[in-house]
Image (spheres, rainbow, N blue to C red):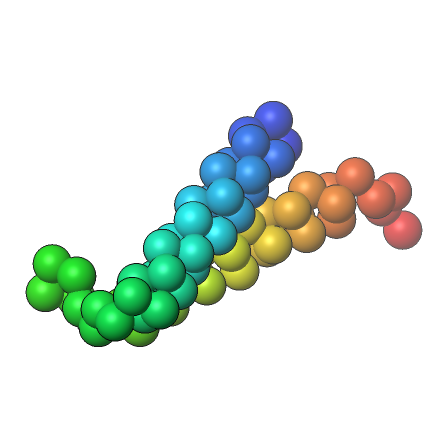
Length: 68
């Protein structure tokens, strides 16, 4: 199980950062919705992906700690 946690965390983190960057650029250009979805909704999805990536990385670290 630990073999896929690190790559999945990397993918989720990068995808979340890309979504946040795209929505930030969209707001700066004056767009408020893309494809029927508000940019804030897409931005929140990006934040959610980055939080998910953090949780995956935390689980990976916790699984490497010695058991008490």
